[in-house]
Structures are given as C-alpha cells and as structure tokens.
Amino acid sequence: MADEKNPLINAHATIDRACKILGVEEWIVKKLKKPDNVVNGRFPVVLDNGTEETFEGYRIQHNNSRGPYKGGLRYDTTVDRDEVEALATWMSLKTAVVNIPLGGGKGGVKFPRKPKEYSQTELERITKKFTKVILGDHIGPDKDIPAPDVYTNSQTMAWIYDQYQKDHPNKLAWGVVTGKPLELHGSVGRNKATARGGLIVAKYFLGSSLAGQRVVIQGAGNAGAVFAELAVEEKAIVVGLSDSGGGVYNPLGLPVAELLLYKEKTGSVVNFKHSGTQNLDNPYFLSVPCDILVPAATENVITDENAPYLQTKLIVELANGPTTPKADEILFERGITVLPDILANAGGVTVSYFEWVQNLAGFPWLFEKEVDDRLTYTMETNAEEVFKMARKYHVHNRLAAYLLAIDRLAKAMRLRGRQ
Image (tube, rainbow, N blue to C red; front, side, top):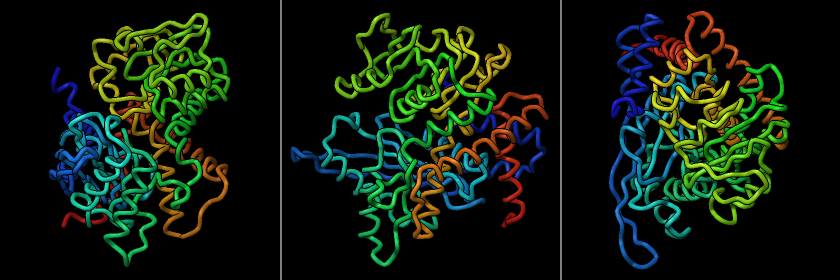
C-alpha cells in the first residue's frame, strides 16, 4: 500500500503505461520521468519571539520543452522531495493537456509546524528568505513562474515578487509569479479559476448545467469553497462540505453562503447548525450519496479501500492526485466517470498563463468576462480532446489525459532534438 500512495511512483507508472500505448521512444520516457533541475536547501528564520527555526525549501523544474517552468508553491509539514517532484511532473502534463505554452515545475517549504500557527510577519520573513536563498536566480518571468498552492496565497506571491524585484533591480519582474493581488499586476478571475475550470469541464461532460445535481465537496479551501459557491449559482444542490476537521451533510442541501461564513468565524464547518444537517467524520464523508463528488483537498483520498463504496456518478478532481491507480480501475469498472486532476483543476494554471501574458504585454484585461470566456474555450476544447483519446483507446479519462499530454510533449521534444 505504501507504493500505491506514493504520488511519484503513481505518476511514473501512468507515464509508462501511456508511453507504451503511444510507442514513445525510450529517451523521451526517461526524460519525462526525471526532472530537469532540483533545487533544495535548509534555511533558518528568526521568529517573533526571538527563537530560530529551520525550514527546508524545494523548487523542482520538471520539463520546459513547451515553455518556461510553471507551478505552485505549497507550505506544509508534509512537503517532501517525492511529493514536490510528483506535483512538478503533473504540472508538465497539465500545461500540455490544456495546450498552453508553459512547462512544469513545483516548489514548497517544509514547516516544523502548521503554517497557520505562524504570524503574518513570520510568514513574510520565511517567504522572503526562501525566495532569496532557494528560489534566487532559478525563477524569473522567462524561466520559471511560481504560483499559490496549499497554504500560500496572493499575499505570499506579493512577498516573492517584492524580494525578487529587490534582488533583480534591473529586471521588469511583474511576471515572476502569478496569482498576485490585482494591485500588483494580478489578473481578474484568477482567484476563482481552479474551481471555475472544474465547473466548466463538468458542465461540458454533462452537456448541460448542474441544475438539480447533488454535489459533495471534500475540502473547503479556496478551490472547494469557490466550487460550492459556483455550483449554487448553477442551481446545483450542495449536500456535503468538509475540511480537515470533518464534514457536514444534509440530503436536502446546505445553505452554502451561511456555512462558509460560519467556517470563516469558527475555522471549521463542523457543528454547523441547520435543520437536517449532521456532522460526518472524514473517513465516511466521501461515501455519502451524490451525483457529483469533488475531492478538493489532498492526495490519495480515494483508494481501493473506499472506491467500491462511493455513491456518485461523476468525480471532479480539484485536488492534485486524489485518486490512487487501483481506485481508478475500480471506478472505471463501476462506471463512475472521473474528470482527472490534470484536466479538471487546470483552470488555475490556465488563468495564471493569462496573467503572465498580461504582465509580459504590460496590458491588463479589465473585464472578468474576457478571462472567463477564454478559460471556457480552453477547458472545453481540450476536454473534448481528452474524451476523444478515451474513446479512441478505450481507456479511462486519466489515462486519456496522459496520452494527450505526452503526445504533445513528445512532439515538442522531438522537434527540439535530443542534444
């Protein structure tokens, strides 16, 4: 089971399978399974109370055959080399799936304690030290463009932008990171992009709106919370929402706006009082009846242990790597459709690409509708390509997405040459 839950081993196994189907040359297979560059190191930071803690930082640049490295930065106690490398690999595939001219990278900082236990001033010092000591000259608007991920946000990106600009005073650094605040050349629509992209793909697959669909969402962070809000706008019925502390479920529907305000005040959705609403422990939460299940939290939450018991028709993966390979096969056999992470949650990197384009041009797009229209075109066009691959090779959508991405990556790598 250990290997089954190692995200890097899972990513490599699916790459091998896809490359075999496509007949990809061995040199390309090897390159896809080995990052171009790995940067990591430890750095001390003085905390508000005068004590010192040591943090470990990573930036893994996986593949830039189709453009500069692109990928998020996560802060957590669980960050390690395999996780970051797997995420960097998925980013190369993700940018290829949605056919944007970027590559894949990922980074993170391993914290001794949960990031939410640190003050804003401490987080600023940690971020700027990480930027100066680890990221350094390895990032840049034409080289590698980080973005927010777990426990990082637009403020984190603003701190990175500030430190990078101080260390590179002769460069125009607007595009060094994406997911920035609007006041520092961010893009309208970026905050909702991951959730909106998943919603667009779900609607495209269903061939209609989400009206009347019962939705369960695991994870009440940015992606999960925004998906819940957007689903309500589509007249879907959100029956379940969870966070790290547990979940709440109401078969008649939850008042999402009220629930999210409650979470903001208390820190969790647990114990939300509303007629017919009950608490559910996380191990049981995923198996409640619904039409659409949205894992929007962490890796490896759908496994061969719970996949036989899921009561849903459609899974929209807003989290990275939420489903293990064995679970994928079980779900496929059961007729449960999975819209895989490298397609379903690619809205975030797509609008990050739009932000980067605006930064390079020095010309912001003023209207969110322009961003949303371009995002809709990108997601729908490439979702159709994934579904075509699935039909052509008679495989589930995750493998189809890998086939599409690797086909595009392999063509770029062949054209650029082996040397």
